Length: 392
Ligand SMILES: *Cc1c(COP(=O)(O)O)cnc(C)c1O
Image (cartoon, rainbow, N blue to C red):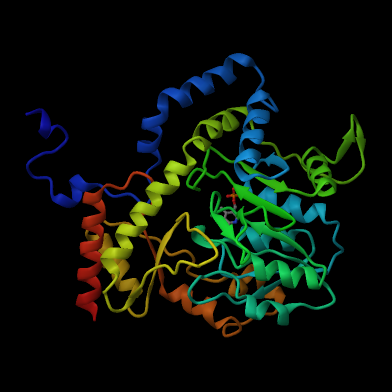
């Protein structure tokens, strides 16, 4: 009888299999004892802001990334804004980025009175098309923000070559690819996010290294930039009640840092679980016509923040059919930033970024998290294949 707990005879397979896009609760259950103990420690310490938990986690993450300086902050969006503020740019200066990303990447550029310049992406990696990067550079270009979309690095070797040639600063939006490794053509490896002048990440709960609230961080190997970043995060205060620049209030709180400390010790395991799920998907879809599995770039490992298929035809129908079978999916992103009303003022129109626009109509992200069972993966892949074949 006990094996039937929670399962009534009338329950269908799809109900009992209960597939989620992300599954943070099950993950928490497995590390509950450690996490709860660390939270309790912070609560009894009374050091809720900038406590030892924040310092410990910052050191732990800096070590993991092999980066010299790390500044925690309140979110990934804040991290990007603070990074740009640290560059001391002038209104109207141009910042090159992509339109196939989460809005935060472009939002902070606009907020600071800078001009977002969007370049198209590569149709296979979904990341900044380095072939189109150089044409977008003008005398006003001061910064490039590549986004490591879905968990795989942009071509950072080429980005840095171009940036260095033109003396342009590079900020990596690493909200989706923490823990990924980049391999240069000479064989040296670096953690993604530590290759540009500043790297930014997010600890939003569903990110690969997520806390149970909001959080973010900046990292850099540049001593001068590190000092500026830390000052800006703390109201621009250089010494007690002396303000050398306009700053913000952006902090990672001690409870979130304590949680992140526990989760960082599992990050490599979590990445492996994601990669195992991705391998299962890849193998199942290998010979299925009409869908393209994620391209694996030679220069980057893939930490699969998302597992994203390209469906040449009938993407929306596939999504609807999957939903009927109890399989959630997401479209990241259904509408590119260059054609959003908020960015009308930048002067772009439909047709300006053809690859980006096509991807908005073709991509679909399948459930991807650390807790997917083989049974669930089998159920998902069976139905994806059946739905694709049916519509062919
Ligand atoms: C999540 C995300 C951000 C913003 O992070 P928040 O912590 O939610 O502010 C920025 N860029 C990308 C690419 C993201 O995925």
